[in-house]
Image 1 (cartoon, one colour):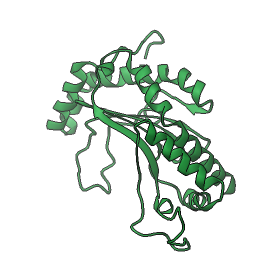
Image 2 (cartoon, helix red, strand yellow; image 1 turned 90 degrees about the vertical axis):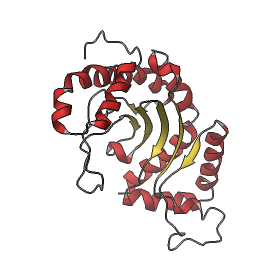
Image 3 (cartoon, helix red, strand yellow; image 1 turned 45 degrees about the vertical axis):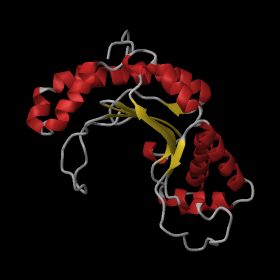
Length: 236
């Protein structure tokens, strides 16, 4: 990516590329069209991450916004080792800006998912590490940290975010089922997100401000999770 590259949106051709990839999800087709991927998807993705970094750092001083594959840009190659779907390529773009000193996917962060006709923005931790699960449950039951999580969830919900996450079918062992936050203790990953039709902003530089506005509404949960992850890392 040239230092002079600016993000000017994802083109209609970028959506067409993903639609065609979904219909031709194989290595020969991808290799034949790799230049299109580089120009239509990867190049604007790098520019978008680079432009999101400084304003995100104003909201989250420790944010990592690294415009490289396997950093803030998820690789397009799928890990099919344990997947029922053996399609080798993802038919969408994923971006990740994270806060913390641990492995990037064990940190709380901000996610962007772009595919034809759809945009999803989220924040949180998809799956807690073993150390984080223990810390999370301890914090949920804590007399100050637990209510702080409830307030954070109420705040992000009031801004239109949908709270979700991986969770156990039952309250984990050692947690009183009658505890007022027993349901929260079931989570093994926690995030908030908005999933919507692709906005017009996605086709222009306006997507930067669009992401910032929505991610700002998710900050309460992000900060709570980032502090929890920091405590888990320190205790490990």
